[in-house]
Length: 324
Ligand SMILES: [Zn+2]
Image 1 (cartoon, rainbow, N blue to C red):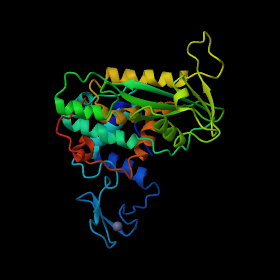
Image 2: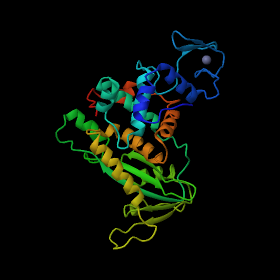
Image 3: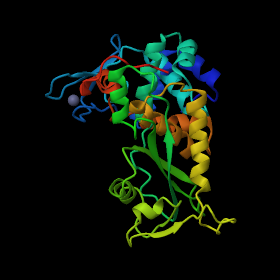
Image 4: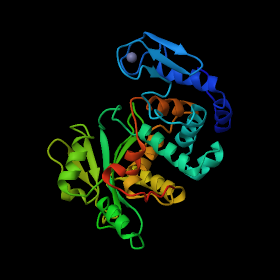
């Protein structure tokens, strides 16, 4: 499969619908046999003029396109815009703002923001790599801005997603590199740092028998006997061998750099998507841009995101979304 090697090439390459089509075919039906995403049948017929297939299976919505069943579904935006946008976000080391995407692709900033959010959903870690094991670092960090100057409704909303109305808490769990694997990270926005919250997250992410390292806060949520738990003593004048959390601290500085430099005004409500994006790039850093693009694009299937979900309207949220 031919893929572009650089951003510049990607923008030019995906300007042609035929190149988009071939790439999506390769991604979705690598053996060339098109299957209906709704019923799995191969009794389908391509209508070239409409760029859709028609399924002969007995169900509603007989027609489907290259976008059906992916995060691009129901979007009026063409693949010729979607694919370079995905390339941009997956490969820009410190993240990219909707303003930059809008300029690069010739869409409005609002459209670009929505596109970025959909792609971030695709990049969400669905635990396909399995539980984290071996030597694992656990740490939390606080992210967020001032809520003092916000409108009252908005302030209340933000407070629901953060601690003490000040900051959002992100829990990071990093598996150190071993002989067979690169290091990888899972980061999640959590509502509080209570023992129950921490233990639930850890039990769902770290394999039993792993060695867990944390800072002194780990004393508060003490692990059960499923894990060996080493606690860093920051007051000690030396680092005690393997007992440190420097790996996850490196990830925090990358995350904060991208949030500070690019996503000027991320609301706690949307924060987890930016965290997912940064985790994706971190976990797939040792490869070419083209390889990273294919890996990210493989994750676009089987996921959907509506505008209401995205803006939180389903939670009664008003239209105070401030894109960044
Ligand atoms: Zn069907």
